[in-house]
Length: 233
Image (cartoon, rainbow, N blue to C red; front, side, top):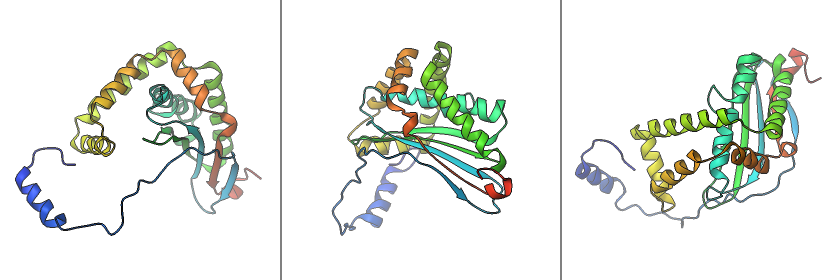
């Protein structure tokens, strides 16, 4: 996929010269990503002499990007661990000063239903137990109390604006077009998604988050020089 100012004829000629006679030796087969239940773990990995520790939380959810709850989960994840205004960043990075970076991501496949929820944080090994506790507490509070109307309104405006900015960049636009083309879609998919996100209510977002995020099913792995920091003993 090529986007931007270019000579179409020259590009077509180059592509034909480079790939015109190329044929794959193996038939194409899409790598499947179906949902499967995974038992949660909490594991510590010692990495001696590393200055920073990495904490990664993750869980599996049964969802594809054609699911009715997909728009709500996009916005929920954005508010939980997306930009610097997100809950995890404001609490763990700004308020408590425990980590250098913290964010979450909810990744949903097309044509399959093996969605993944992940959150990561980078911190001083000595602060790792506190980061873990704060993450678990913030996730529990979000599941219990949901998202506020002001929070949802601000997140919708920011998320929609980010999407517009991304489409103004050739590299990002080429990536979106290529992704849509692969599954026989156009930017009408993005238009419909953004319309759905814009119409979401706090109740819808909170309900979807509770439905698809099971705290008991979230695994947590932390790696760092915990022995030297005298934590997790």
